[in-house]
Image 1 (cartoon, rainbow, N blue to C red):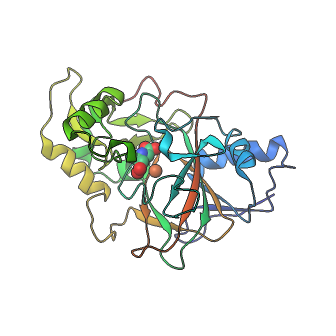
Image 2 (image 1 turned 60 degrees about the vertical axis):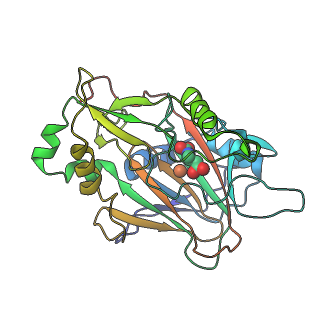
Length: 295
Ligand code: 7UC
Ligand code: FE
């Protein structure tokens, strides 16, 4: 296994000659360290089938099946499929997922520690993922803004991005919305996490899921505060030119591991309808989301 160094603005650490079938426990421990400290690890030239991909994910934590079965790969509930392919045997997964700033499962009681992303079919142009390092975004906040969120909390809901299921056709929208609220009630997390492994402070908000901020007593803070934080972190930049934003693009065989506490991401789908498919395995590690003494 050869671990590269980060050069220029290519944020991911590239790893060559990694074979999960023969990897030593030291190799895997090194990968785990790099996920947390470098945030993105790109394993090059991987050729894994579904069980091998799930087994690799399990090296970084406990794989979790996505709560909504329509995303599941037919051979494993632990593989979330994003796909626009039309198979004769029917649809697999969901098309054009994640095209909004988010952290996976931030709206759930146990947000994922690590996301393992494995493109299966790449379009000719424009398949990549935008990222923002929210620890860096926190450090870059105006000190006054940083002070104003000390000890505060943020509320998160998936409601704006839950996909209508084929089985929901002809159901009253109010009933579907009520079901979303019941199945995935909003979660509250500290606005600033203390990463349990790196100790870094992370601004833990995203444009897709975070809808309100409140003080420690649960009293609402002005909506402009959330907007200011989203803007300062780069999430409201429609041109994706903000300094905090970087793109990870993909070559065939890339398998990308990232720290889902620290990074938020946004899928970059090609504008046409070229065939594209990706698999993902998401895991919980042995640590709490945030250290208890979170600011
Ligand atoms: O279809 C999607 O974009 C899924 C999204 C609402 N949730 C992904 C996640 O893991 O939070
Ligand atoms: Fe995602």
